[in-house]
Image (tube, rainbow, N blue to C red):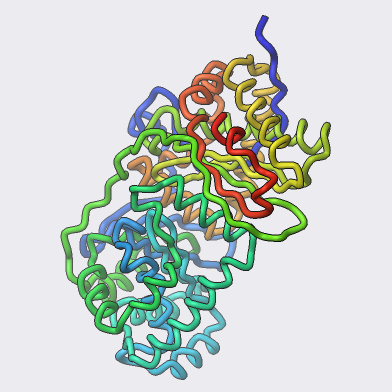
Length: 441
């Protein structure tokens, strides 16, 4: 007789459908508030929101870590940060004064698959803020003194990574999980790469990489298509065309159990491990996201609720073009806790998910989805993920239907297919961890 699992909790994320292609999921009823069009060869997604005066506009520089090497890790956000210190048309003081008068923000949000360079403004201040953002993107001054100043800032951040157990365990886990792929590189760079970045390297990167073929623009707010077209045509639409083509990275297959350790004297031990999942285009993507949420509920119930071994236990799902799932816990008893986690993974792989509990889990997922997409910035990122990961921004509107298609059998199937070969990072008292426990994953 198969054991039955009670699914306890879930967190929302962009997910993909089971058994149907993205194109077949587009509704016959069009989302008239959202449109896609080209301006000077740059794809633009505009969601017209008239309920508020907030405008989010993100320019996505596609490719992310695939645009870097071990020598240039962190170069793109570094370059964009340097641009804040002056352009060929405006000094740092002039840029700061202009932004202060507008009362708006320009944000840099680097990701493994892209770097978002975004405007946060109001309908009235949007055009002025866009002009400053575009000037920084197209005409950064890149003065030697500014490069030196930013290098110091980045090196400080890199070195502080070792002072935070959570930051360190995340960095180590990413590196070991994706070894041999671009995802193993650091978004913010390493001490080696940041130290060796020069003004000439930044200039070369800017001249080669800032091209229209790398761009996707997503705007959410109370602005019109003609406004967007005018702004793009007069600014980033004048960049060189380039020859970049966005693709989903090739799947790398599952890894083998692995461990990287960092000895630290801490009140508790930090453990984070990842297993490789399917690409976002796979029919398994959605089911694995739900399976990870089911596992998190079980871990919470057993490790925190029953055994009181940790206050922080999670089973994260990594929502990238190439997905991953993981196990995270902080505990004084690593061997005991990991053994219990392994037991819950096996239970998900061999047991039977309660259909009623799964329905409740899905409803929690849906509720969290709407909560996570309240702001214009959230909506912009969600549309971008649907467009880039799934090939059509309209797929984002089918979140609820897709989620409800996941069956108990799907959850068990993907747990068996992907939840193995986990690569772990461990920060804490290494004498308390047995290698044999890790090998069991």
